[in-house]
Image (cartoon, rainbow, N blue to C red):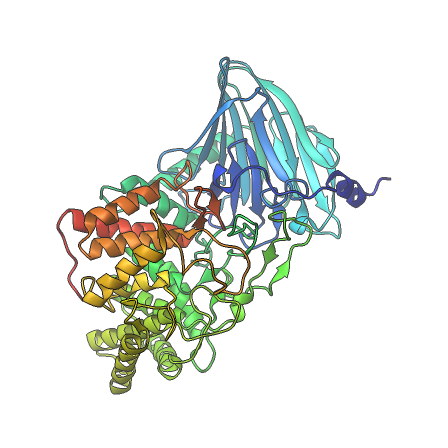
Length: 617
C-alpha cells in the first residue's frame, strides 16, 4: 500500500508562495473561524476548528504544500467579479464568459434564532445563464501541512479525510458525485441554466447535511447578517465603508468569548522582500479602546459589553502586581511560543511563524488602552462593579510605579526596550481615565498619588520628547526619529488639536513619514526595529492622520487623505495591515486595527464637515 505522506510530499516537492495576491481575497466566517476565498474560486486559507487553530487550507502561504478548496467553472479565461451580498458576510464570486454566467456563494452558517449552526464552510455553485462545466478539488492539509492523511469514500456523495495519528477527521458532502484523486476529493460536472450544486465541508462530528438544507442555511445566514447590520446607528456619509468595517469586526470576534482577533491570518509578509511574517490570530489589549469606541458609536452595545467582560476577566486574572500580558488567545489563555511552520514556505524566503514572541514583551501602552476602554464603557455602557474597580485600581497603581521604564512599545521592537513616547502617552491616558472615572463615580482611589504621576508624565513628554530643532515630538528622548504613533496625542486628548506644538508635529509627520496618503510607522531607511526589509505604509496610521488633520481644522486635507485611503481597500472593501508604494497589500489580512481607525476617522470627518464639534471632556 502506498505511503500517503510520501505521495503527498512527492506531489508538493516544490514550495512556492501563492500566485494570487493577498488583496484578491474576500473573507467569510462564523465568529469561531474564518476562511479566505480568492477571485479564482479557491479557498486558500482556513484554520480549523478555531481561528487560532492549525491551518486546514494554507495555499495563501504555500501554493504547493498548503492545501486549497477550489470550486470554479471550467471557462477559458473568464471575467471575474467578487462581492458580498448586501449587508452580509456572504461572499459571491461571479464568473462571466460570452456564453455563460456562473456564481459561487461562500459562507459559514449562522442562525438568527441563536441555535448552534454547524461549524463548516458551505459552497454553492449555480448557473445564472447558460450551460456550465464546473471543476471542484478539495485538498486539505492538516496541522500546518505537517500531518499526512488518507481519504475514504463512504458513499458517492461524500469523502472523509482522516489525518494520520488519529486526529479529528473532516468530511466533504456534495450534491454531485465525488471521486478521490491522490487523497484529495474532486468532481467534474455540468450545470444547466438555473441549476446549482452544493458542497459542505467541516468536521466529521458536526451535523453536516447536503442537498436542500444548503438553501435553508444560506437564507438563515443572510437573515442573521442583515438583522445585525440593521442594528447600526451610523447614518453618516461613509455608511457603506463603515458598515463593511463593522461586519468585519463582528466576523473577527469570538461568539463564545467576546474577544476580537487582530487578523485571521499569520505569516503574510509585511515587506515586498517577504520578511516580517508574524502571527496575528490573537487579541491585543491595545485594540480594546478602539474596539469599544467603535462598537459603542455604531450602536452595538451588546458586542461592546461582551468584549468588556472579556477584558475585565483578563484584568481580574492578571498578575498580583496588576500587570497584564500584551496579548491573549481568544479564550484568554497565553498564546503559544513563536515557532516556524516549516512545512509552509511562506513568502518564498522563509517559513511563516506561528505563535508570537511579543507575548513576553513589556508594552506599557496596553494599560492606557485598557483604561480608555473601561472609561468609555462606563460613560456609554454600564458602571464598573466594586470588584472590577478594585482590580482596575491595582493595575493603575502598577502604571504609577512603572511608567518611566523602557519597553518594546506599540510597534513591538525586537532589538531591545527603550523609552518611547507612545508608551508614556498611554500611561498618561491610564492615569487620566482612572482619575476621571474615580471622580465621576465617587470611587475610592489614591487620587493625590495618581494626580502627581499623571502630571509628571505630562511634564516628561513635553520636556524630554520635544525636539526644538525639528519642532516636533519624537520617538525617544534626544533622538530625531519621528514616529506615527504620535498621531494618537490629540485623539486621546493629551494635547489640543490646534496647539502650536501639535500643529508643527503634524506638519513634521506629513513631511517626513507620508507618501501621498500612506503614513509610514517611523522614519524610513534605518534599522530602528532590528528587522530586515523596508515595510509599507501602515494603514491604520493613515486613518489616524486623516482624523488628526480634521481635528486640527484642516478638514479638506483630512478628507482627501481619507478618500484616497478608501481606494487602497481591496475590491470588497477590506484592508491589509500595510500597503506597498505600488498599492499592493502587505501584512496580515484583513486587519481589525485598520478598520477600527477607519471608523474613528469617518466619525470625525462627519462632525467636521457638518460643523459639529465634540466637547472637550
